[in-house]
Amino acid sequence: MFLYTLKRLFQGLVTVWFIATATFFAMHNVPGDPLLNDRAVSEAIRANLESKYGLDQPLSTQYFIYLRNLSTGDFGISFTQENREVNDIIREHFPVSAILGILAVVFAATGGILFGALTAIYRNRLPDFIIMILVILGISVPSFVIAAMSQLALVSLNDLVGTTILPVAGWGTILHMLTPALVLGLGTMAYLTRLMRSSMLEVVGSDYIRTARSKGVPAPRIFTKHQIRNAILPVVTVLGPSIASITTGGFVVELVFAIPGLGRYFVQAVQQLDYTVIMGTTVFYGAFLVFMVILVDVLYGFIDPRVRLEK
Image (tube, rainbow, N blue to C red):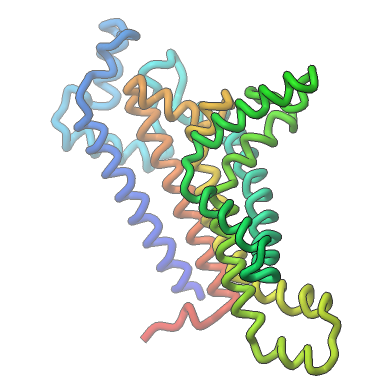
């Protein structure tokens, strides 16, 4: 198990290095100079930045300076936000994205398991058709479209009742979190619904289900003790990567709902060509996703020794 874990960690480090390298060279191929825009810095500050990051040096030298800083956990200083380090931006705003992501995962997992089980129970009947149509819409429609439509619906609802039932945007209370978390989790909920449906249909035809029915076990007990417990396993296996993907995929949702999360700052950094923020948040999100995948792989290694077997 130790060698298996070590192998996964090495693969994760290689993946993070590739993400960091690809991000570095991609950003240096973007036209424009972040130090010569609407927020142009003074000559003294420009000289200090050039000295720190080797901006006046060849690209290979800049690359090695970049890797050296990353190895010490230094993502650099923002080019557009005065006296603010990228590490501070991540430390202050990632918890907001994490809270929103965890709540979205709760919505996605609960809805995916519930709707997936219902579609399997009512297979080829009206509830199955309705839920599957909604699933297709949830997968096909972009999150920013759903976010805009949900805001319009909230405005209409609040106007209709004459008070604010749910805030349209902002952050601070649980009411501010509900709508953006639901919008953020819809795509994953749709995917988990399809996965749960397929797993439930496979379990229904299993020998132990037929045996339980032949022994006279009540249908509700078969459903809760046998069908759900076994069908939910594939859903659990994808929750780790789903948590990472939802937490790191709320860029547009955070921007639409004016949520002060890390994704919102990433979008602003792209608009302002803030290289250090873009590269720092990209590497951080990539490392977080890789960590979650490795964690699931290692847990799988403990649960099922077959995944550790090598020729």
